[in-house]
Image 1 (cartoon, rainbow, N blue to C red):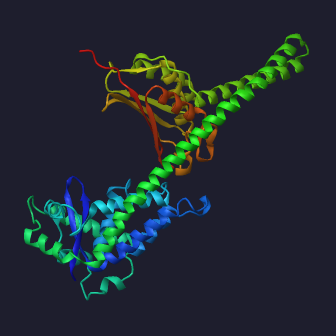
Image 2: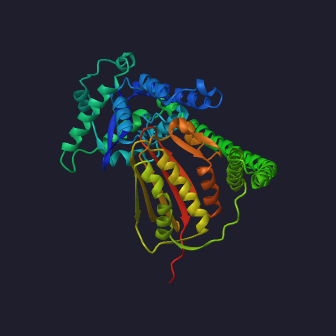
Image 3: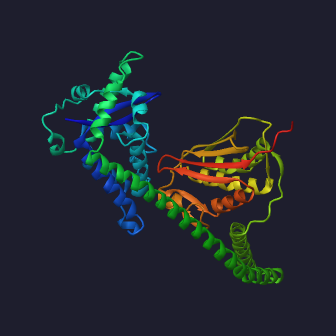
Length: 446
């Protein structure tokens, strides 16, 4: 059974573990790559309800590729040690899960067509084909044996992975290396092999497809936000005028009214008109935020002010607020009022995401590129991918997923962007949400 490639498995802080991959296994990998490319191309052509899920994509990939023990162990190791790259993240769309998997396969697969293949193999801890057979209990019986076997169960692959990595951990430091002769022999076997060539051509083609998918998704998102901003600005002007008339007429009637029930009804009209006005004001800020008046602000003073204003809301919901600032002298250059307003909206969302007590933690550190990084973590219900993709849309509410977004995040997004900062979200259902904000740091005096 000719070995024509290796798969590099991540192993804690140690070098990669190199698993031998026979020619027959490349057929399964090729089918899995083809299916992943199909998943990516169909992402935008299918209705939302008919799209592949990351779970169904993962199951299909396992069925296509995991017949070979080395491939099965690599798949299990990727999902366990690097879930952000694997397919186990059920909040990812199938296309995005496929993209991440293809990236990892491209980084892990070593053949004669891989740049610096010999150097990568020499830096790895090798597992021989015999050791692989002993660990898995599968002995080579013929050139077509792997092709005819059914895909292994995930639990079996995990058991194989643990045994292989356990044996690697028990090896003495400076143990067996792949010899120069063995490296040259393997790479020579793979040279000119049609199956190896097909897989590498597919991986090369996938680079362009992955780039198109990412660029297209980003362009659609930017265009959608720009359309929403234009609509918000025009609608805000149109709605504000009748609201002002309603509030003014109701206030005039209220001034001359003495009957209690009519007073109550008129007061309700005034209150609701002002509430709608404030909502329109938030929408107008999203559409065209006011120019910030930036000044040097101490970050801990700003965050403590925000915390003070949110304490009562947190207490009502039994939520604990924690603050960790690395440097008490760290300053940022922002419009203090705008950033405080943004952070209050973000903290409000985080608190609302927690139903039965929990923690919202805020941390501020000095990051690279002369920015201050502020992170807001909650252990609430989190968001799925669809909700997260629309988190910055005004008036979009993810209450079905446990979050009352409204204008909070859309307004924060615009104000932080206007102050030269950025905001991003990472979230998973039932595992909480992390909001990361970068703000320009004040230059240190010399």
